[in-house]
Length: 69
Image (cartoon, rainbow, N blue to C red; front, top):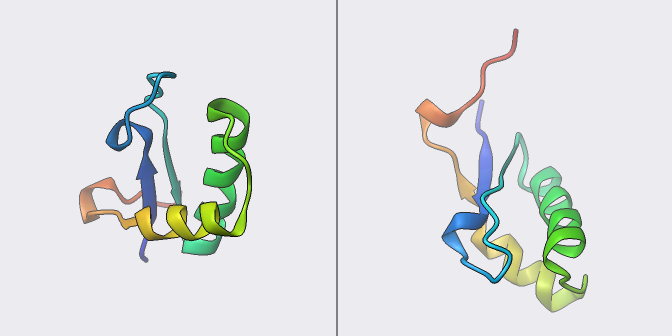
């Protein structure tokens, strides 16, 4: 099963955020990242912002994939 992620440490900011978000689909991750970026980083949810974030989502390497219990 694929997992996708985004790590705020890859995009340094004044907030010095260290959050990493993971999800099974890019769509689910995009929504979680947008919520995080709005609440913590103060970004505005615009079509251009969503497009930029969508390009930054990465497939997690096998060792970072979570297993279901």
